[in-house]
Amino acid sequence: MPLNRRTLIAASLSITFVLAPLTSVFAASPAPAKGEHGMVVTAQHLASEVGIEVLKKGGNAVDAAVAVGYALAVVYPNAGNIGGGGFMTIRFKDGKSTFLDFRERAPLAATKTMYLDKDGNPA
Image 1: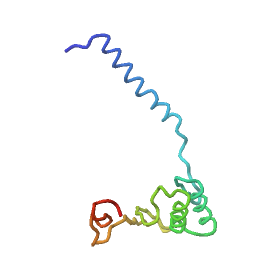
Image 2: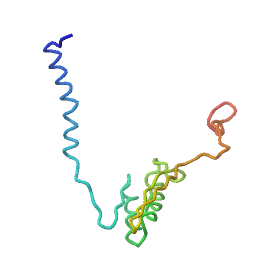
Image 3: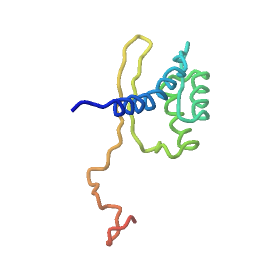
Image 4: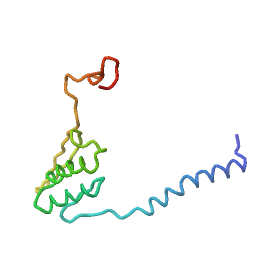
């Protein structure tokens, strides 16, 4: 089925209006940040500042990450934080790396209904 001119123009304009905003997003992206002696990035600047202070006082990246986790629990509680899980890649001074998988797990005896009352409502 051949496309008529009106359909072709409408399709072209639709694609243009969808893609045009995306090009400005990518064009306006800042250059990547680089750290000479370390870097802390979080969803909340106060938690990032806690991590930076730990590094400045001689702590390592794991120390900073733990401190940031506790800080986020206070300043960004919606993120889940304490009791949650995650992943961490650690690169040591000697160039070796390791990966930690500390995803959250339910206890073996946990059930889908353990926090529901007899009527099936959250207790």
